[in-house]
Image 1 (cartoon, chains in turn red, yellow, cyan, green):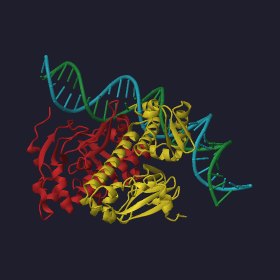
Image 2: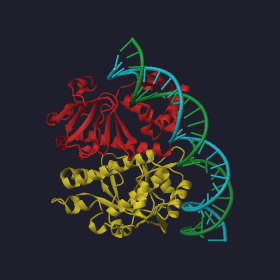
Image 3: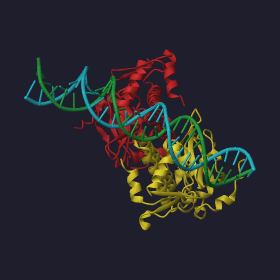
Image 4: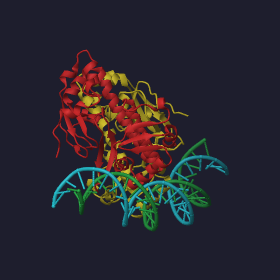
Length: 248
Length: 248
DNA sequence: CGCTTCATTGATCAATCTCAACTCGCGTGG
DNA sequence: CCACGCGAGTTGAGATTGATCAATGAAGCG
């Protein structure tokens, strides 16, 4: 069932020409000693709905997403899933994997996915010598933690509308930062992004029911706040939409 | 209003005799070069309800709690608070402070609090040379992140009863691990811990209303699951109580 | 002694869930 | 080519959880 790891999927990786990927860019250009050559890395792929990594045990690997979307989730006793975060191209699967072999969650491909696996042991060795890489990894950790804390606040304090709006805006901002969507500042009002998430993904990430997600999204559409079709989403009125997300 | 930093509060720190504190133990004993002496650290205190650290900007500091309980929280636009975690003696305030100067949340003392502030720049320098310290800091990060992820799952999937039970059990386990409460394995059934949290703390940490927390706790007491008085909490039937927490 | 914080309790309200039925599109096997 | 099943989304009715509002009492503290 699992597809052969293919070089091909990785050629369409948006960061292919930059080096390894978003993350690995620093390895290639930055430091004088060019530590990139010391860090073994291999390419892998996964199809939609395939589990790329299972919770626990993951040997000497530090994987980074190069193309596609994935969800990091845990399964509860009754089979219910909780999504901890969505992984986009350029995201490390987990900063914790630099320090520990055990992954604390599972990863499922949402779209076709391609990722590279670096060797943790190599990476750690290089990390000590390369201040630039050290900074890069620090910022991976910091952003990861900040997003987790943010989600805690959302789940603890926000209504369904707010949670969903914040999720969407958060994803949009991450895409904009990576140049995968044009900032609303130019077109002012509208902001269009790819959006391969199903409603059940949104539900699992916001702690809501798929049924309720459907109703809230329909509400957004009826109020002409967003447009949603063909796996892409347009925020029609960015200001007003942010207003919903930042109510409190 | 802020109390003078007092050496005295720190003398009753349970880890006082071990070195600096739970965390600093490794600095003193482990490495041959005894890097402890290189790391500047100062002692501080805070009274109940005092804000020990405010969100953003915190210079060259890496603080560690030596005595007491504190809450790490963020304030929303409307003044509402969300508690991200409770800090116990031996906890670093935030692993992120090793990498970045900005604290992403505020910290309020719940009980009388004493903490030590290490210099991040010193710590980082030592960190590179000392594998033991490196491991220690790694585990701080990993546990911090695991707890955050865990809370996300709780808030996303659990009922009020489950959330509160899980919070209590989580705190009990942390105290047991530090030898601040005797594991239920001996006494089998009951487990008594210090519990300085007010119901509004529990509410902010579980995303519930203080009113509802009161009702749930009363329910626990009426069913003889817990006993709660004088700032201490006893889990009367650990098995049954865990059953409530692990329903899903 | 009076103020503030904390906890409790009941009545009512609102947000979200649950259940169920239905549609649509798509891929598969006959 | 068609029938079928499956996953995804929609919609409505009713149930439930937890929020809100309000009143009260107890405890701690200056």
